[in-house]
Image (cartoon, rainbow, N blue to C red):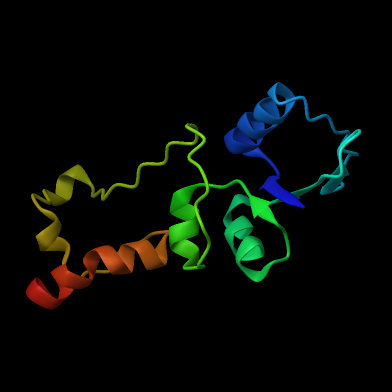
Length: 131
């Protein structure tokens, strides 16, 4: 059982990679599981943010997702190989009008993010020192 993202750029890259490897499948509309043709492989299509959790719990054998998502999930999994696509870059941003000159000035402030764990880890030392 191989988990891949169910949509988006990573999905497109994964499907391209599978086809390049000669792995063929037919995915029925609105179905998140597909059997590969002529191979004992089941593809499971999941939200990219869930894949590391499914791998960590053993619900799938391997998965393809972004390392940022793996880090955020705090699941202990082995990174077997870097596939060379899906380059995520997280950054700290603020409105120009606020004239934020350094990350230190954000210590102790409320930060909006979808990567709560990564952001908390990043700001922890700043909050302790400057917050």
